[in-house]
Amino acid sequence: MEIYLIDILILSGFIGYFAIWNVTPLLHSPLMSVTNAISGIVILGALENLNFSSTPITTILLLIAIFFASVNIFGGFHVSARMLKMFKNKDKTNE
Image: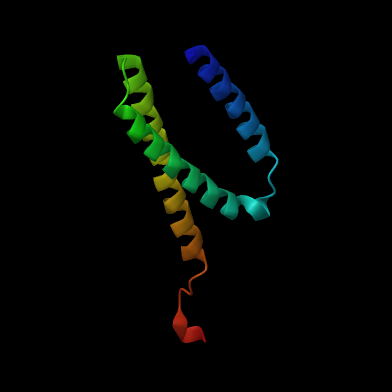
């Protein structure tokens, strides 16, 4: 059963890589919002499965998934904040 899940992980990695690589720059912001939502679902699923993990390797993989999903979420929020900061007026006296 675990080999089957590893195959799904590898195939989804390839599909995700090629799907994101071909996205036009205009769609990067909506795509980042969707990946943040997916990462939130990954964190919730991993936290739920931590209760049922029977082997140490499963626990380690779940913690790694939580870590990388958290990095993706916080990185996405950081990039979004920087993009929104670019649209603010620096000097309001020029109006």
